[in-house]
Image 1 (cartoon, rainbow, N blue to C red):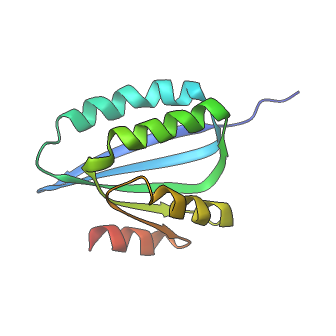
Image 2 (cartoon, helix red, strand yellow):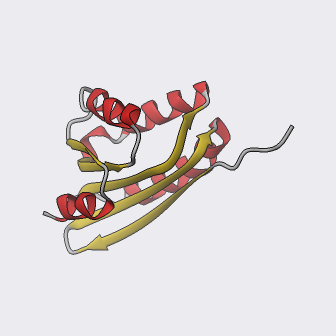
Image 3 (tube, rainbow, N blue to C red):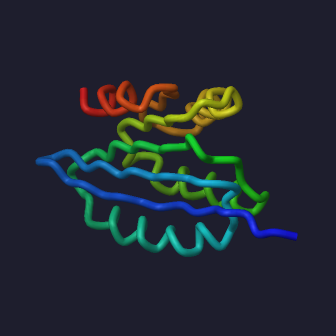
Length: 126
């Protein structure tokens, strides 16, 4: 039985009063992935008081979550719901587009799905 590749990486950039977070999800995410990344996100966002956060999620290599990791992702989204101004999800899977629509029910900011990476970046920057 082989091991499957999975990871969740995060990048951060502050430009004036705008704060950008970028995520890259690869493979099937686990609870352990969220245990590693959540403290980094917590520390980063606790210092953001005035700026609204714009998020780019590159899900082009994302295959889904283990059940507990899906719950971790949902809780993380609810925790920072009011900080997110825009969330762009980039991928090429129909279920991601459907998931984006469902996610919009739970988040206060705008959330949009893109099949073109440059379009996602342009929308976030507008």
